[in-house]
Amino acid sequence: MPEPSASPDAHHEPARRVALVTGASRGLGREVALHLARSGHDVVVNYRRHADLAAEVVAEVEAEGVRALAVPADVADPDAVRALTTTAAERLGRIDVLVANAAATAFKPLVDLSADNVRRTFDLVVGGFVQLVQGSVPHMRRGGRVVAVSGIDSVRYMPDHGLLGAAKAAMESLVRSFAVELGPAGITVNAISPGGFETESSRIWGGSKFDVMKERFSAQSAVKDYGTCADMAHAIDYLVSPGARFLTGQPVVVDGGLTVNLADLDALHDATRAFEGGFALATGGDGAVGSPSSGATT
Ligand SMILES: NC(=O)c1ccc[n+]([C@@H]2O[C@H](COP(=O)([O-])OP(=O)(O)OC[C@H]3O[C@@H](n4cnc5c(N)ncnc54)[C@H](OP(=O)(O)O)[C@@H]3O)[C@@H](O)[C@H]2O)c1
Image (cartoon, rainbow, N blue to C red):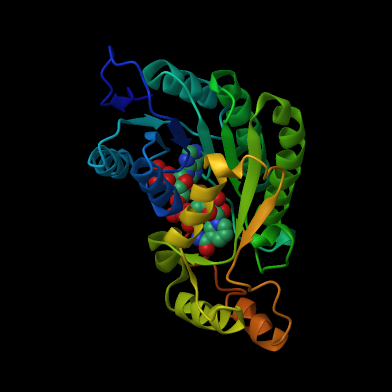
């Protein structure tokens, strides 16, 4: 594993809160890292493959006047997660905020999934989340905050999202139990549950179908718009703030009112159908298929 890159001064006693964000090299994780830097957090930028992109995020975080540390780790690997949380605490002194954002899966109909697809998705989304919380909590103090990034596929059918939705549903169950276990220590545990939002990878993987879905999801939403990374990051900003001390154990749905609008179900049906059977846009060496909504692959 490559050495973590860092900007901390080894003799500096940390006064700022430290945030660990998984999958922070791009997409939502990158946006969250920048938001947390702007609100005065030192930030641990975890990534899996794209060291160059993680280095860019580190530079952007440092430009906000806080410390940044890029740490490569496959969150599906328990040993790597242990090393990630240990490195974060050793190099930055503490962990105050954990945002479990990294996710990847094979987007296929359930009947076509391999055992390996299922194992790898659950290792990352479920096992990785447990390991991250277990590794972070010993370095947290009162006021600690954990936020899991879930998705509305945890409670709603979306074509080819059955496996990821099941893993996210398990993650939300863990959020409830962790919240009760960690509440007495002054640590809150919540999830955000986004509808669709735009990332560079979701555009690449979705291709022309992305625009169709975006248009129809916007029409079906209450606010008549599609989500952005900033919309999700603002919700996380609140969940990690001191003022959110009484909010715990909850999935906070951030979908512009998409899932509460029963006014035009045909449009929503069309919006999701637009993607059905359309995911074989690219296949990795491991047979994983790209995501129309998150660009993730296993
Ligand atoms: N986009 C949407 O419409 C949408 C909707 C609902 C929920 N979500 C959720 O929002 C989160 C972020 O989505 P996104 O669209 O921003 O994703 P993305 O653009 O695909 O970015 C994924 C990030 O996770 C990292 N990653 C992937 N596998 C990893 C692993 N095993 N260990 C460590 N890091 C790993 C990637 O690192 P590398 O760059 O190094 O590979 C990258 O930084 C995910 O949890 C997703 O399920 C997204």
